[in-house]
View 1 (spheres, rainbow, N blue to C red):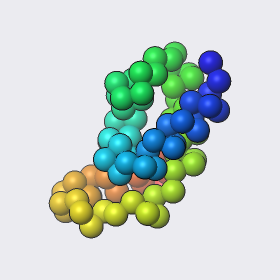
View 2: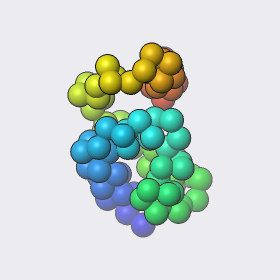
View 3: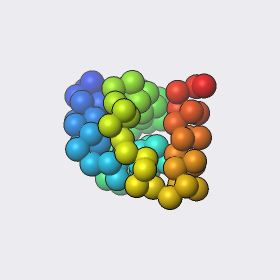
View 4: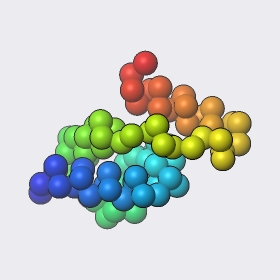
Length: 84
């Protein structure tokens, strides 16, 4: 399987749908498996997740439409994703 193609396909779909970005931030493995039908070994799925994280531009992701608890949870997960 071409990991780079999978990453590009996932990024394209995520960037066109903020709800998918929200789902990716909360549970990337589940989103990739259920929404995209991607069933890969853990090592490869982790490569896809890291590759997608590196390419998603969250500057256009509007957190103002989320409730405060949901936004705080997503920001906490984003912080964990970015390792900060």
